[in-house]
Image (cartoon, rainbow, N blue to C red; front, side, top):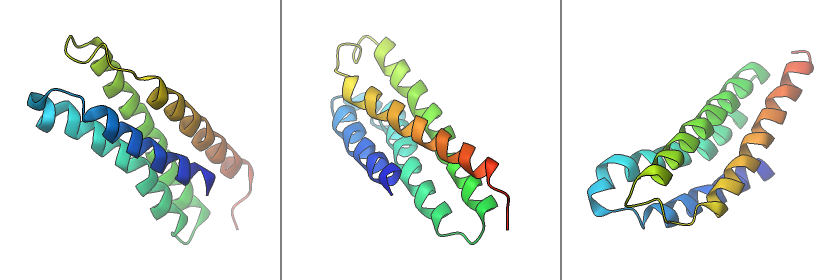
Amino acid sequence: MVVWQKAMDLVVDVYDLSDKYPKEELYGLTSQTRRAAVSIPSNIAEGRCRGTRKEYRQFLLVSFASCAELETQIEIAKRLAKTKNLSYKKVDDLLIEVSKMLNAMVGKLDVIPST
């Protein structure tokens, strides 16, 4: 699945970015940002292996919510003095792309009747 592959790329990019966060953020913003990023492809994969469209949709929604969580954490990092000068473009662009893909997938599942 393309969205899963892109979400995996996002995880790698988030890890690379958060490696540049101050060491005192290891158990705070670094950990939280990484967990949100990891949650995105993890929930896509788990939902895909579930037996029903309804469950799949629910896991895609959880992934989409994790995108919003990650977006917020990245925005926080952009506002902090010690992390505001880092380059966020790669993560921002990929996060927007993954979010749009998940949103479209959920929309399509809403339109298709359950069987």
